[in-house]
Image 1 (cartoon, rainbow, N blue to C red):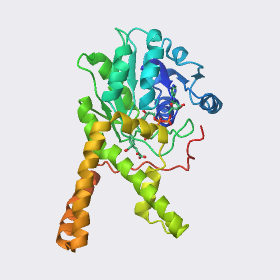
Image 2: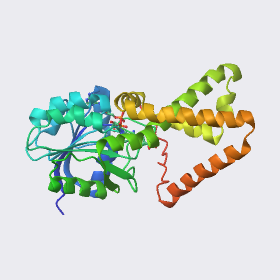
Image 3: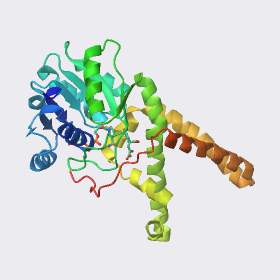
Image 4: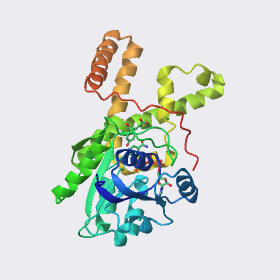
Amino acid sequence: MTPPFQKVALIGLGLIAGSMAHAMREQGLAERISGHARSAATRETAAEIGLVDEVTETAAEAVRDADLVVLAVPVGAMAEVAAEIAPHLAPGAILTDVGSVKQAVIDAVAPHVPAGVHFIPGHPLAGTEHSGPRSGFATLFRNRWWLLTPLPDTDPAALDRLESLIRAMGANVDTMEPPHHDLVLAVTSHAPHLIAYTMVGVADHLRRVTESEVIRYSAAGFRDFTRIAASDPTMWRDVFLHNKEATLDILGRFAEELFVLQRAIRMGDGQHLHDYFTRTRAIRRGIIEAGQDTAAPDFGRSAKAD
Ligand SMILES: NC(=O)c1ccc[n+]([C@@H]2O[C@H](COP(=O)([O-])OP(=O)(O)OC[C@H]3O[C@@H](n4cnc5c(N)ncnc54)[C@H](O)[C@@H]3O)[C@@H](O)[C@H]2O)c1
Ligand SMILES: O=C(O)C(=O)C[C@]1(C(=O)O)C=C[C@@H](O)C=C1
C-alpha cells in the first residue's frame, strides 16, 4: 500500500518528533522522513541511530518537497523556525505543530505561512519527562488525545488527512478553539507542572536540613512530583511564558483553595477536609472510567544529553 505521505519533515528531533518518526515507520505512514534540529549534537545522534531517513543541516532543506511538515521545537522557537522554512514550503503542504500552547504558536507561525499551505495547529496530550533524539518510542501516542485547533479557513480535506495520520499513530483526535485549549491545559498540565517544580524546590531547600532523607524516604507522592519536575527546562520555561494568563489564573485559584485547606487543618475542621478529598477522589475515578489513566511507561530512557 502506498503510504499516505510522500515526505514528512520533522523540525526538532526530540521526544515528540522521535516518537512520531517511530510510529510513522511502524505503521508505514511516510515514504520518506527528513529531520532537522538546531543542535549539531542532536543531528549527529539522530543520524547515528537512524531516527529519520535524512538529517539535514538546515530546516529549509528538510521541508523541501515535503507534503507534511511538523514543527516539534519548544514553543518559544516556533516563530524563528516558521520564518526560516516559509519560503521553502511546497504548495499544498500541510504544516502542523505539536506545541503545548496553541494561541501563542498560532500568533507566531500563521503570519509566515504562504498561501496554499495548510497550517493546522495541534498538540498530542502525551509525553514523558525525557527529551532528546533517543527518548522517542512508537507507542507514545497510543490511546492518548491529540488536540487540533484548526483556523477558521482550514481546508476540510487537509484536516481529514492530518486526522487520519494521527489516528494511524494510535491517538484519538478532538478539535478545540485555541484559547479554550490553553485554559484546559493550564488546569490539566501547566499548573500541575509548576506545582511539582515548586514542591521539589521546597524539598531541595529542606534537604539542607535533613541531608539525604528527602531522597531516601521519598514516598510515592513525592516521587511522582520529582518525575514531573525532571521535565525539560527549556520546554517548560516556554510553556509558562506563552500561556501566561491562563496559568496565572489557575494558580490564583489554586492559592485560594490552598489557603482554605490550610485553614481547615489549622482549625481542626476534619469535615471540610474529608468532604474535599471525597470530591477529588471522584475526579480520579472519572478519569479512570474514561480510560485516560494511561501513564507513559518508563523504558529506562535517560534524561536529555543534548
Ligand atoms: N515533552 C512532552 O511531554 C510534550 C508533550 C506534548 C507536546 N510537547 C511539545 O512538543 C514540542 C517538542 O517537545 P519535545 O518534548 O519533543 O522536546 P525535546 O527537547 O525532546 O526536543 C526539542 C527539539 O527541538 C530542537 N530545537 C530547539 N530549538 C530549535 C530551533 N530553533 N530550530 C530547530 N530545532 C530546535 C532541539 O534540538 C530538539 O531536537 C514542544 O513545543 C513541547 O511543548 C511536549
Ligand atoms: O507524562 C508526562 O510526563 C507529561 O507531563 C505529559 C504532558 C502532560 O502534562 O500530560 C506534558 C506536556 C504536554 O504538552 C502534554 C503532556
